[in-house]
Length: 24
Image 1 (cartoon, rainbow, N blue to C red):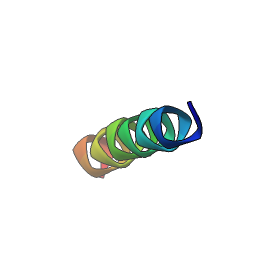
Image 2 (spheres, rainbow, N blue to C red):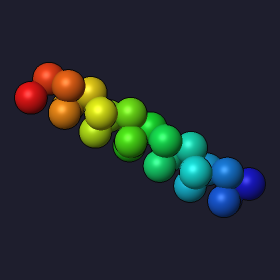
Image 3 (cartoon, rainbow, N blue to C red):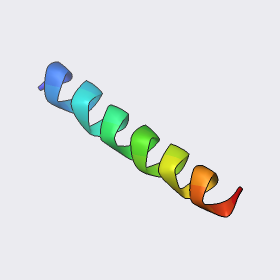
Image 4 (cartoon, helix red, strand yellow):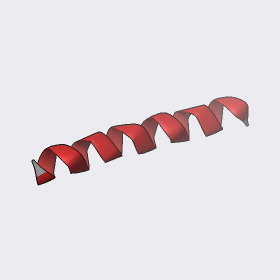
């Protein structure tokens, strides 16, 4: 479960980064 949580967080972070990049 912990690993899954970490993976989910990574995906969320990646999506956030992509959004920031798209805005910039």
